[in-house]
Length: 119
Length: 107
Image 1 (cartoon, helix red, strand yellow):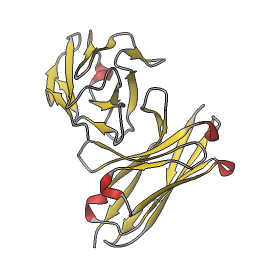
Image 2 (image 1 turned 30 degrees about the horizontal axis):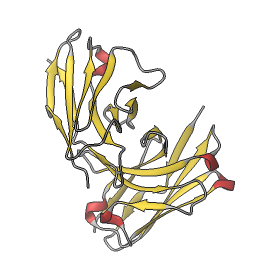
Image 3 (image 1 turned 180 degrees about the vertical axis):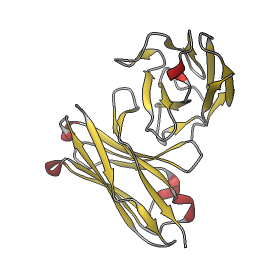
């Protein structure tokens, strides 16, 4: 069974940092692009970042460029999101998702981890 | 960036009803569109990809159509488990963008 499990969320002050992790199982991580997508409380979905199979190609939404870094460790079957200079507006549930470069979407998704940025 | 809009923002319907949700892109995206279902407190689930392809395991009462800028998701006969929010997503270019969502609730 394909499974994605996020961890690392929590409460952090504005300006702080947090590192999210996503543990992948049931498929060969190194064969797929991966993504982070977030959802602010009561709001819609927002794509955050993508990374290709070997980590050499990355894309970010403008609002996180220069602050967030997506990375991966295929040997550890893990995806990461390093979040620096966090803002109140970064408060959201962060989902890890497998990205299909064939049709450009996300399947499956992890259960999500909540990041709260507040003083 | 490609902006996605959806209508209606919410719809009240009864079990057995036919429900249609519309998604519009701010520029042509060919058929590069996906639909997701999300229930409260849960992760989104893929329903449709490339506008009209049903994801494996998704009931056949769900269907998608459209190309260019205008797309629809149709639920032919609403079931109790279909009460949820639905999002479209353009897969044509980065940044990938979602519509604002349509909430389907019980009349």
